[in-house]
Image (cartoon, rainbow, N blue to C red; front, side, top):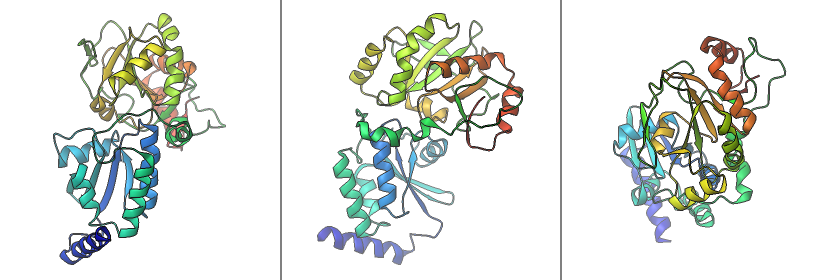
Amino acid sequence: MKFLHLSVWLFDKANELGTMTADMQHYILYDSGCAQCDDLAAKIEKESGGALTAKSLYAREAKEWLDRARPNWKFEPTLVQVDGDDVRAYTGLSMRAHMLTFLNPLQLLKIARVVQQAGVPLFGPVEVRQAQPELFETALTETVGAPASETPAEPEIPSGFIATHDGPEVGTHTPVESLVTTRGEILALAATPQQNTLLLFFSTSCLYCHAVAQALAEFAQDAPERIILTFGAVEQNKLNEFLDKHQLKDFRVVLSPETRSAFGVVGVPYGFALDQQGVIRGKGIINNNDHLDSLASTFYVSVETFKQALASRSEDKVVVS
């Protein structure tokens, strides 16, 4: 009862002081690479009755908000308040306290219940967990993408992977100049005169990532491109299990939530084809070996041809065919 009285008082006080405006928006930022976190975020948004909007920590606007509100932000669940040009970020106990100012008691109780049931640490650093099988369907909504268009796009470009509008545009320069692998090797992305690069984003808790990784070792044997595997926040033992299981220990591996955010990757597995000058030649969701082949084929298609094909589609997410 004390909790209810406190939340009611804070909610009323916020209105009384005029701290809640009609244009004010609240977002709960979470790790979309974790299937269980993805499911929990959707439930929190639902139980808030529209007062909270769930958004991936990897989304470009999320990074922009955090850079403005908290320059040295950490990769953890974060509550962001956006009121025009004013952006504020809350984590841990301060996030919980701020929720009391704009959520009513019933909403707070419902959210507390779903967080407790999920067992996910909402008020601390992100913990990458092994997702529960029943939550994969929710987590992979972005990954599966939209169905193929019945009418082939003209001009024809490689088929297979699902092209999206997330992240930097095709034909633009890589937003990250270089990466550092888990072994300390520095990999230049802006200028690699010897070979093209396939930059692949994975998560150890993603079902389709495991499916792609299973065939990746065989794919790499004949691939002339340099392949870089990039992960966000992940526990070292989970990463080791993933690499051992799919025989990928000899691959170049990068751990960098910042890189995933810079490339605007929301759903995984996702890949970028970077040419020798660091120009993005293709990008999209890759769910199998054929998709990898298709992504690599964009090196042999002009940027303008690729753009024309994408412009001929009306969907936000399209299967390139």
